[in-house]
Length: 542
Image 1 (cartoon, rainbow, N blue to C red):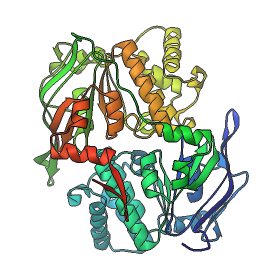
Image 2: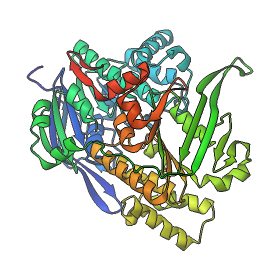
Image 3: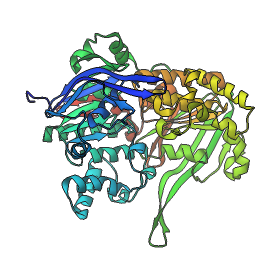
Image 4: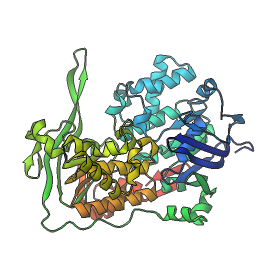
């Protein structure tokens, strides 16, 4: 610690110019980060956390966004209004940032080696070979298995957790003085979360790095941060040491945030409930191609012989570490990627169907994706996004489709008048509600929910869980619920499948598996999720 703050933010205000006038996103926020210190900024989705972080890096979309007032000083140097040439020297070198949505932050046209290596060559002047060696070292540090095989991968070929780890590797590449971590463990499972947080703390101790941690996970805050600042509706409502704020929260919003935990359980499945979907010995293998002729020389067995069944009104939770095959299983069952083995939906094998035969059934089998921002078209209004499926399936007149869109938005607790706005004008939690409305408007029988709450803070998570449970009861829905958040899985699921390396490790009733896991891997997952302990380096899963 030093007397002079590493980062000093004073009276920061951020306004956005919109068609509806000026919108205040950040309202006079002030905070400091010292060398070797971690400040956590928490608050509900849309509270201004990420906007504040992007202001530090001067990455807001100008002139739409501007600062009516405020100062951001990094080691005494004013960043507000700094020349772009100076900011390029600071970004990635002096200040590193882990972005919240890795799929949109990574370049889809470049392989991982180029994206990580580019930072090393630009800021450190490393040769191509030296950059490659350092890239391998960084990917190994953040827990990517067999990093050499991933150097030639594009972002879409990685799982959500693997993409997040690549982002972390890029942020840490040049050992920055300040690390801004915007939801750094959102897409990773609990065991990898513990490893990443421990790594960040070790690097902080080694280099005296200051960390600005933006997160909705209060468990992470409690065990990794020194100070915490709580934001609501663009304003800072409380700040102090982690110990003081967690033990004696003063503001009513802070009290609600700390008390918000996924609770309850879904309604029991009705006796004799019809089986909606079944798959036996199901596989999803990705070919590995090599040589000039790109011949297949092997396979990545993302899903390797799994049996799945889900009934009307039932939620089947699918858990496991990042890269275990959870999302591939969900996509394969919907025939959005190629799978092998029978998939029987309402008594009919959809694997044997042509695309034409499958099309009318598709509206009954919907999906809510992990990254709501990446899955919503930025060029379409919310009304067009939600109503697109109705138009594709030729359901009703234009007026009838408009009425269904309004009804779907109301059902997910969104103001129907917002249907004329665009995705970037909504918070993460609101975008996820839009994704749910897009699925629900087609009145499906089954929905695959791929990490639907991973990017949401606890208070919004609780709301979305209640929403999903209510929709399940009112529409007799079957859910395939994919998540690394075991507390959410417990609150949502009737049964659970634990996956590792494409195979089922353990399966059964959710309460039995979580309270009395039999397999060592499941035991490690449960321990990491429910028994975080603080040690001298930060966090360790036991």
